[in-house]
Length: 341
Ligand code: DAH
Image (cartoon, rainbow, N blue to C red; front, side, top):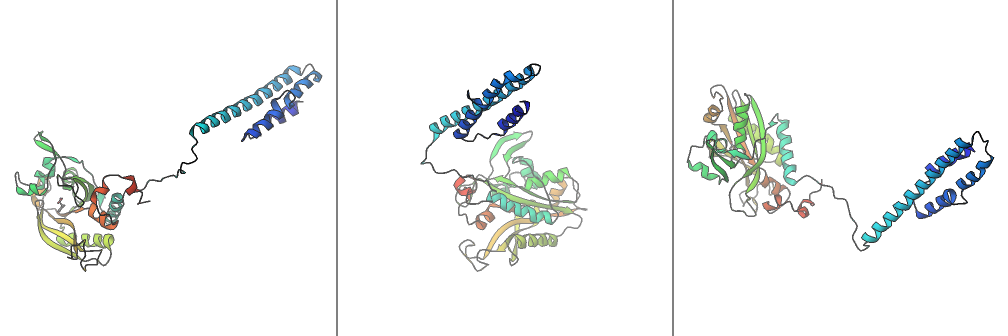
């Protein structure tokens, strides 16, 4: 008897009730009045009286286990049915899993970061809410100098602790933060969002991305800057690109230049995107102005350096053939789904 009870115990545990038919089979085998367990109770009479309490207890436990399993399955089927009746709409299209993917801006930024980190640049970040002094003064913008008007600024508060708070108009203030924070040699890139109060259109938006570069060491020259930009441009835009450095002005660099690459859409022949010129502007750059080094406590007699700053979004638009910059910021899922991982 004891062996029979044990083997039924195991059978109850192993019995899989996947359908209502299974449940009925289980019930008929174990829990009905003429079932296996009831039969064993009938046989209890013939068990040795000394063993009866122990065997009786085992049998009771067997009965309880069978009933519990039966009840649990009954409740589960009832719940499934209630749910199914309430929710079933066979006309609904099936649901497919949607896996998120990297935003096109992050893909391009990721590629830029990879190229510069292969060249030994670390990554630094700074706040998007910035002090006027870091965004302008310490970068050698004189007060009320027209150069400030080159960048239409969103001011947040006027004169807090002696400096206005604004939304940074470029990533160059991160240069200042890094130089105040560390001793040369310094070699970093600073990717991030910047803000300008400009008319919004398919070509310009009030927020966009820049990637800044800064290298300070002994005897850094313009030739080092050119070599770095060349190496970057070949990896980013293709080994055939040519570069053009045009003299320019930025308060924080001297000399300064703007850099164009041969239009990588038409190969320099001239097309709609490069406005028939064959060139695309990719960045501003130059040798860090001695005033900027002094502002950050770095001796310009010992140290020199170069800096560059490039827009990221235009490259994204060109690389992914997106014709409106606003699409990069509206987070429209219909747009994002076109760029799977
Ligand atoms: N901050 C400049 C801008 O937003 C871009 C720039 C130009 C950054 C020259 C630099 C640089 O670091 O050297 O227009």
